[in-house]
Image 1 (tube, rainbow, N blue to C red):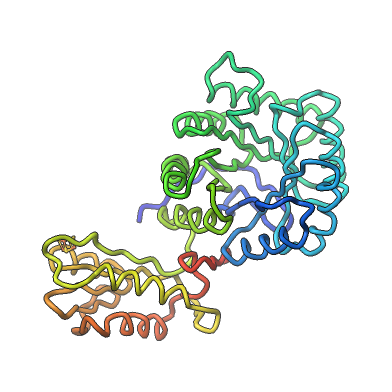
Image 2 (spheres, rainbow, N blue to C red):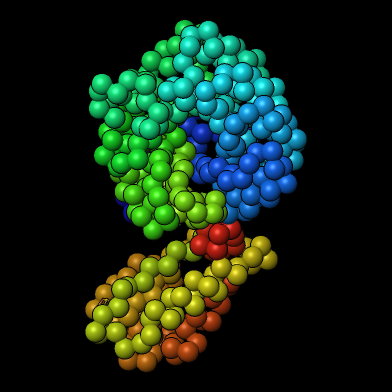
Length: 371
Ligand code: SF4
């Protein structure tokens, strides 16, 4: 696969996670319960980490939330970002609670002295600030969504820099793809602060995943983006599975085995849909004991001899089916005939005997950020 040349950005530290520069593109999400509900928040954070998330954001609506962060921080397995709107004092409280990053919305905290106070507190705590513009909360609506987000973010950056604060991450999320892409492209030319990518309010999982994949895919393919979030009206771990698949599809991260399978057509003489579903399910049950070292393999499962042998040859492992049997390929070489009924076991046994990393894959909802 052709490699993507990433934009050079400044390295920023969020707890134990480094973003920007040549660091891996990090996956983020948010807890979706009230922050004062400490045990449920911690439960979601644990689940997110197991799914492959590296940074989690928590909504800070009031002082009770800001105070709860202290206890959550002590037990959290992921770096915490406090999401602050309207009330600058909550940012100070969240910093005092020990969070690893603050997200500010330039649309609702913008007074110079308030921003200066937050910058001072963040600098003394040694944590970064994300300037996160959203198309739904822009102050200046005289110019287009994309331009208005860029102006809003860059004005804020100048304000922070005036306060000698440079530990900055930026995001410019619109709810439509074109404004999101235009805004990020523009801001990537104006500064080298790392960019957190996302499309806001994308909706239900199916459409939301498609919208995020298009917008984030365009930007990531151009080398833009240091962290990502796929916002979905769904459980947090679904966001991680979608984000991991986007990064994996572009060759930017590897989380585990990737199945390449054909859509089937009238030429296919086996129940390929059944095989692929079963293979996916069996890979989901992979665990640490089966983890080995090496690259995450690609597994081609193809329905007939038209494209089957070609794709199977390209993959690390592959089966191209004929009438009832399949031909097994290992690293591009045809090895043996395999019966339909035993093909999954044969593929899985090959995975276990070869130096592939197959444990905790994104496919299983157990992504491994270190892969
Ligand atoms: Fe159809 Fe064969 Fe192509 Fe699969 S590989 S879609 S069965 S032609």
